[in-house]
Length: 325
Image (cartoon, rainbow, N blue to C red):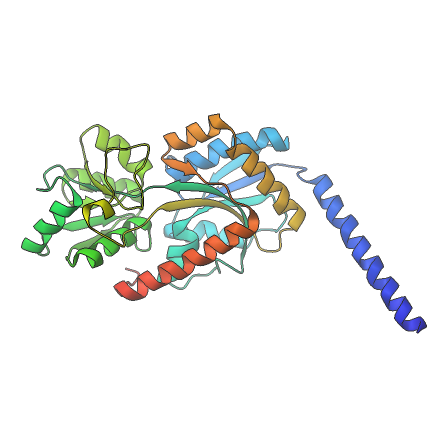
């Protein structure tokens, strides 16, 4: 009986100690600069969002938030770096659909998108826009599908690389319309857009952030949105579904992650801070200018969302028989 009592008291002591330890972690955090690792080069949608949000978070947390770009490998280089970082809340990553859903579905990686990360919070979505070189003889996606059936293998489509959202969107369009086109992968969106404007490739599915300036200046023409609803940023552009093309839903999402085993109190504080930032109308407006629609989430909701996305894109890879180039 005495032994059982001692064990019970010991368990209580451990629980109390853990509670105080968690409280100490939360009370002390953050004590120094926080780094947000961006898996793309400077100037893209991820980079712009990270800098906008990081600046606002620094005011709330009273510590500098630094943005560090680690482009390459379709986000794999940055992902592996963050996965191996100390789980202390001082290294975060603004991941996106490629790093935590599409890449893992397409190829074997040196990081596990589930086991190696803890979700911090969702930022939002950016619609994927189907665009074409102005010389392409189609004013919308439906007309392009008709042209492609009459002229098989005449269309080359550009992507930011295998496993990226533009790659997956084009393959979903090909499957849904029963057409064929050739994939030309690039190392990033910028060269892919450049060659589509020049006519080296004819079609692309970039993010709204990437596409909008070139559509507005007439260098590219919008054929349709690869999503379930129209974007308030380009309300006159119909979705592919409205044009009778189903099953092409590629909304690019962006979310913050931390290394696995980051203390729960730190994750909670980061999530609350992020959601506080995303509730600011001025921040929402700036993110919309970058093509993103805000959709804040709690930690448990975000875990479920990411897991569902991983299942979804694994099924797409199998259906389209995609392989990494």
